[in-house]
Image 1 (tube, rainbow, N blue to C red):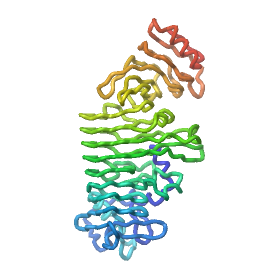
Image 2 (cartoon, rainbow, N blue to C red; image 1 turned 30 degrees about the horizontal axis):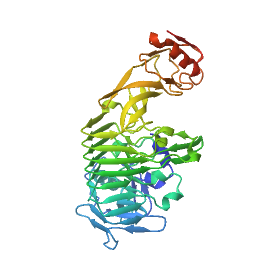
Image 3 (cartoon, rainbow, N blue to C red; image 1 turned 180 degrees about the vertical axis):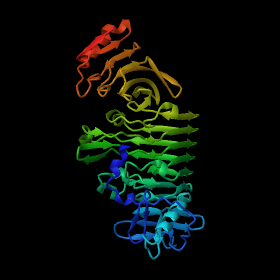
Length: 434
């Protein structure tokens, strides 16, 4: 998942268990083999906000708008404005000696992973940083939550979208997976800004009004742009929710950069029931940098029941061998699509159907986008079944590095002349049309 790379500067998130004296125990290193170890004498987990200047514990009863119930493992925020990162289960150790108590710390960590912390949100709450824990998390309370939304602090960071993450596990390295995280449940609350990262994420009777700003990231190999995701996990469940996602258009200096893979929901399985999901903003945002709202999963893994999804022209989805791009959308309803990219690029023969069916609707395939087959080095035959193709983009069938072997196209007899001209104008060098 390429999104992880933009988090590389957030070194503090790499810790699996942070101890009060600043030492770090990573989650991967300390998986407990024996949980029957008495670790009660080591310390206690406490909610804490910390930033560059100071640490503030929220269980003292002296922090305005914050109340901690240790028995219930419940933190209530009431019109709370927090400056810094909120660690819900910071481990405040006593007489820290890791080597001497290694087994105890590992056992505590493993036991804590199965626990649940509840974050009760009342009124309008803002956290100027990320929210993190190493167990299951439930967010409820009827209020609204913004995590670094329109913060003065966020303007300092080039990797700004990475800083408003709500996570229940690590996501710094390629080996970190959602399966190692805790579950997240969001109910009866309004989310204004957040990136959720967990194992299984459930939204129930929740509202989302989320803005996406295009971020720029400069690496050794060049400059890239990306819209941060909304939720990254194994499974996502959306029930009785109203979600509005607004993508802002790129700035002028962002128009010619390459693009990271970008998704709104990134999961292996998605269930949407009795909900409304709308994608808003100007068309330019979706056409300049196309996004896959439901990630690189097959449509069969997305279950939609009694729900309305308002798609936008320029968005993409995966089905079989291709990533398709919506080329005509009226009032959120798709009527036409084009092949944007070949997903399975190791085949010798590709078939482009007349129509495609998704979310119960059938629509025409009317185009083939630029460079869509550029990675298909084994390609020998392309069969175009439909008569609705109106355009083939530049270099659609030009492969890189260059492949000099000819491509055989099989097309409807009535469209042979037209499609031959499309293929030739697209820059295809060696080909035969039958």
